[in-house]
Image (cartoon, rainbow, N blue to C red; front, side):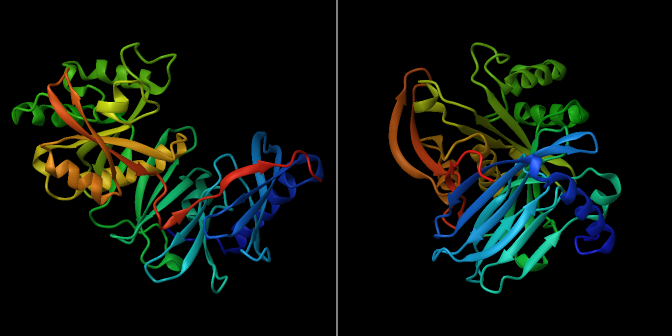
Length: 366
């Protein structure tokens, strides 16, 4: 996949779209937010039509902790803005953001060198992955990126981030992708479910009750209904279940489910996130990575922290939760399951990453 962010052909397209979107009549309002490291970001929003399509755009200005201007840029598609501060293993702090519609940029705050990535495939087809948020995972020197294709649901990818200013979405050999279940891989999901049965396991945690459905088509219909309170069954809280595929061979290695909200039972015994790794793929660290990859999506749902629960006798699950930043709260006894559950809270933005805190709207400012 070739990077054409600095090519003349892409610059011509970018400049044309810039001129259309950033007209005075499209100007809306200003917002300001502050990062945990003291940097602040001023956003001026625009709203207009581009080639018959409604588009949100924005101009951004980044300021130092001393309120000095550092960097400014324009975002051609601000429907899902990306702006993250990442403290890297190399000791530097990088600003990860999106100015191009299908792509991302990385700014070295020390040198002010910017790396932009925009694929030639996106330029030729007009359709590619839209980055919405990213979380740095220092243990693997990777970033977990949440986003989506146009007209498609959110997905989460893992990309190599060992050298931020040359990062071109290089995918590690053992990388996973979290994606929503679709009928395109019905056979894979039946095989996934049957493996648990063959191993004598009655429950598949984080699978949206996959083990309860003999007809896989009925399960897909059930999953389709879980997106909101209006469509979810009365006995089930709205949620988003993801399948974790190993990208090298397309094998589903596990499932993880994020609840959009908690009821009284889930606040003690279920939590926001539940997950499981298929029996033949355990003890390879997939559970730890799946949980870390789910956090950017949970943040998109509005959770600053999530509750994760494990049985007191489930040492592998406890290690996974602690490895991903779990903070112990307390232990509850479940009369329904006749078992003790430990509750842990995990922040959806780790210490190495920060995002703007509560933007203050200033109304319509010219």
